[in-house]
Amino acid sequence: TQDQIRDVVKYAADRYINIVPEIEMPGHSTAALAAYPELSCDPSKTYKVYETWGVIKDVYCPSDKTFDFLEDVLTEVMELFPSKYIHIGGDEVPKDAWKNSAFCQKLIKKLQLKNEEGLQSYFIQRIEKFVNSKGRSIIGWDEILEGGLSPNATVMSWRGEAGGIAAAKQGHDVVMTPGSAGLYLDHSQGKTNEPLSIGGYFPLQKTYSYNPTPNVLNAEQQKHIIGVQANLWSEYIGTEAKAEYMLYPRLLALSEIAWTPLANKNFKDFSETRLPSQLAWLDKNNYD
Ligand code: ACM
Image (cartoon, rainbow, N blue to C red; front, side, top):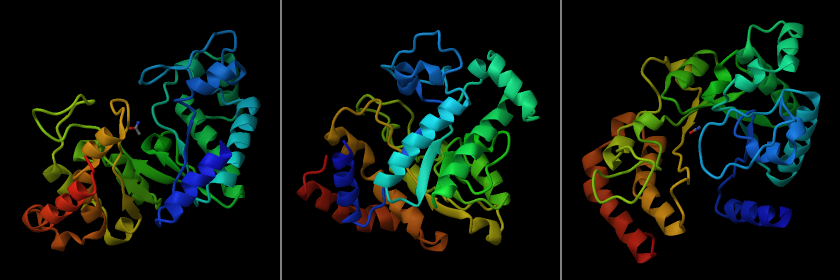
């Protein structure tokens, strides 16, 4: 309920944490399409809420109906979350439904867009305009580069660093969170004796060794890297204890790579001198 959200926002704010809400679009939206098939490009189809994870071909149709709906949702979200940034997703959007839609093909011609990537860019830009009109800013996953970035968008680079580097070079702000560099904490942190997870092998050292300000950027461009983030997707996480198990101690390494100048980073000191007291604190406070 709205009251529950207010409660969570306050709990976080009391601890100096700002929650950035993410409303996914135009993909990862089958729950909305199941409830409102008229927001899809083929309302005659039956849409089902997905019961497992994946990349799903059914996406919002870029119609006025969809924009009215999303503006309504975002208005409610912005009333509840004071965050300057509103995350609008933008990742993993198969273009099949738009390719097969007469409405979309006509819209591409009318707007003189190149292709479906251009349509995705149109979609995000239209949403950005709305969010900006309310005094807020959008963040999107690096796919929002495809077809051209929205003028004021901040980019979250998850498919490696390339998207973040390209965005910073274009003068856009960036949050680095490349899965390939140990920042996806839903991946395993050990080779053996680990609980079921989405896989991978990203130990503490890997997370610690990540440098969020790539050398290929000059000093001016590096200023656009406004932060670094780790993601803990919860497909394989059913309990709070397991979430804690996956987060720690890699979350502590994330903190260091966020706040420590490169020249001061030292894994030996981190892991042998400072980490043990942190681990003792976590144990004492019953973290898993
Ligand atoms: C993502 O992990 N799909 C952003």
